[in-house]
Amino acid sequence: MLFFELIRIALGRQNTFSHTPTEKEWHDLFEEAKQQTLIGVLYDGLCRLSADQKPPRQLLIDWHASVQKIICDNKRLNHDTVWVSQRWEKLGYRNIILKGQGNALLYPDPMLRIPGDIDIWLDGDRRKIVNYVRSHFPKLEVTRIEMEFPVRKNTPIEIHFLPSFLYDPFKDKKMQRYFRQQLVQPKQVELQEEGIINIPNDEMNLVFQLSHIYRHLFYEGIGLRQLMDFYYLSQHTLASTTGEKLKGKVLPVIRDLGMMDFCKALMWVLGEVFYMPNDQMLAEPDEHRGRFLLSEVMRAGNFGHSDDRVGDWAEMNRWKRLTWGTRWSWRLIGQYPREVFWHPYYRISQYFWRLFNGYL
Image 1 (tube, one colour):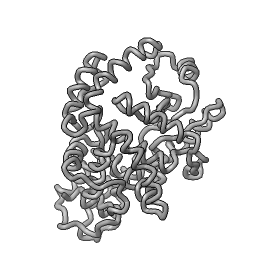
Image 2 (cartoon, helix red, strand yellow):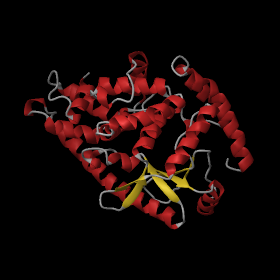
Image 3 (spheres, rainbow, N blue to C red):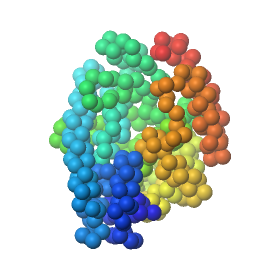
Image 4 (cartoon, rainbow, N blue to C red):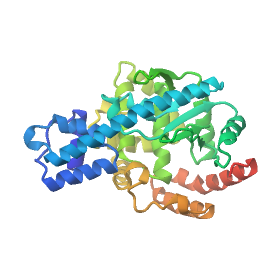
């Protein structure tokens, strides 16, 4: 597949296309890159190509213009990420930036990764945080996991009370206990000369980002950008001299949380699409589950935005969200039956929890 070849060229895993793309194929590659939100990082692949394999001149100009916008967006996100982290620090809340601009630092050129929103995990009393945010924005809804914090005009910000979750209440309890243990030992990084932020340490980051991809498979969908994030995370953590030691810490956690089958599926996709070496994989690849996962990724695009099977959540009432979400997760019954089984329980219990606490 030409699109996978372009990814490998951008990563330095392949030198040239198997054949020179036609003009139509180049336009299809451009559209697929937009759908998967990989316009920026794949532009680096275009620069590696020989003159006879480069795209038509006008398409190259359009691609370049898109990259310049991505760079501007990253500068804004870097500034806003440091700003929101420092704001909560001043209010007395330790915090960790999840994914986002922390992930961008893993890339060879952090400014080419398309930024999204800012996810900030706060260490503090949920009720006090909610009361503070609602004193500025009274009508915001609150879930067990997160709430919005719309203080920046062009930058979506989400406050996390928990980094991630599982539908299975027994596994979820173990997950939250693990994350709480990791909260006290974050990793500090400098964000493109804007300032210092906290991000998850390497061990937690592998578990968290695996669970993040797993969670989105169930209720929205995932795209290749999220998988590329995990590819570069693996490059920075498991390819080092301490990689085997780190793997020895992470694998028991993944197994205990019931995510090993998904981990093996993800490893197969990373090997198939990104040519990730086996020594950088967390587990032995599972081709059967991996092929299913890859088909979901290619159909869904970035967080399901390109999937015609995904409904418009904003237009659904709560009952329709529950019934549609249950049917939607049922497609995974043959892959991850335990999570599918607990999905309705989780949705119903969270509704009543939010109702009881005044968070609807």
